[in-house]
Length: 179
Image 1: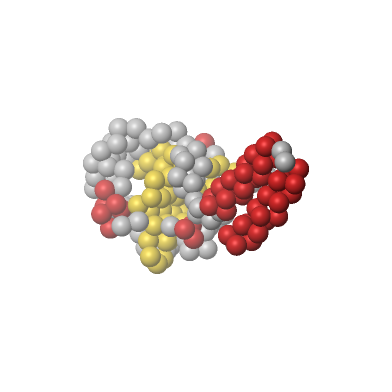
Image 2: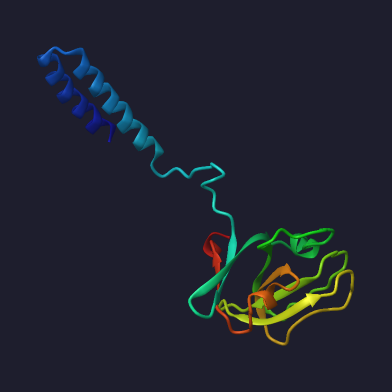
């Protein structure tokens, strides 16, 4: 690729010298630098915060509507064990997505969790398998549904009622293949 650029530069340079113009010469250098910059930038991912995509879950609602939830991810055993413990509030439109390796009956509790939560259990086909609404904070009561799920989304209590979220609804997890 560099060989092609150098050949291109030589051809343009010959034309510049024939015209004997400093302006044309500067244009050629500018063109070369721009080309090199573009080649250097190709294939690189941006680390700029505004470009970085945050993980989110989209729940498809009736009538071609949807609700998007910005999520923190709980992928490891320790992340899942801690969950949303010790949080005094949950940002509006946000939650935590628990990711499990395979579909199983998932059981949760509210130990050291200060805020009521809705738990949305999602199966491996990315459909809502069941919901537990307004789980009481600071309790050790096991909470589960009778169906297997591979993901569990915890959101602020009352969220499911507010958006009329029900079992069977389709879910999209943005960036799932990258997780």
